[in-house]
Image 1 (cartoon, rainbow, N blue to C red):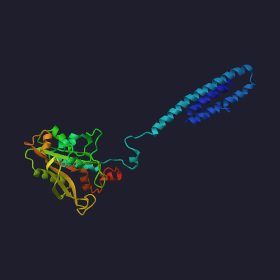
Image 2: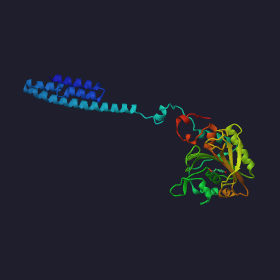
Image 3: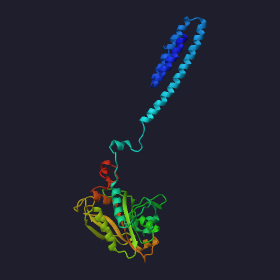
Image 4: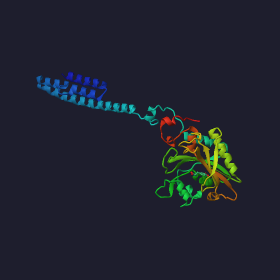
Length: 347
Ligand code: DAH
């Protein structure tokens, strides 16, 4: 009988070691310690044994019960740990690729069309000796307005519906002209630079207006710079970008930071001039406001207007992208639709 009990423990241990789930292990335990289990069978047969033998056997049976319980607990711990590890392995999250993008088959990436065009224009200006400057999105009143000859209460502020911070002093920059001010603060003339970036306005959205869009500012300051120099650079830029001659027209335009100021329009490349939603049926698209830097702006920038002068321009990047790729609605650009953005790769 004692031998039988010892064999039972051995049997339990061997079989427990090969169980692969907690549920199987529990079944195994019931087979030994349950009501109709093997141990109870042995205990039932005790009543036929001699009193002495009954005592030893009873003690040994109790010990066996404890050993089986111990073996059960230890193996259960192992199985639980293995199950956790397995789950961790299976549920591993690939943080480098969201499942939705992978599901849509996005295995390679390209640049956004605005980035593509921005880089192309940067290259054109780099080749003409311009530096590339950057500036903050959050600006102060001084850099966005004041130093650009737009004092408080000047009606020109109404042209740009602005996102102000609660202090009514900081704002999301409404144009990249802020980079003119920062460029003048950091450089001594003569200099020439461009400054691309996002700008923000509280716009009513339609096919040609977004609240977040992109501009590329340009500024050249030196001695005896003329409108002819300005026109030369603008024409070179546009023929490089469109890789063909585009029709342009120059109109007088008012901006407080230039004098004289111009509006440079190009013929609408979407409709070829017959009229569409982008050109508001006019056949012309306002693309490049520009002018000769106002003496006050130079003074704010610490530059003597009697010695130096220059020109500046502010290119609307999104419109240029739309012309370039025949996109008929500016809202496509921030739609984050892959069907749209996958058409653009690299240049
Ligand atoms: N900052 C102007 C705007 O966003 C655009 C502009 C006009 C920039 C004339 C210039 C300029 O540099 O000379 O409306």
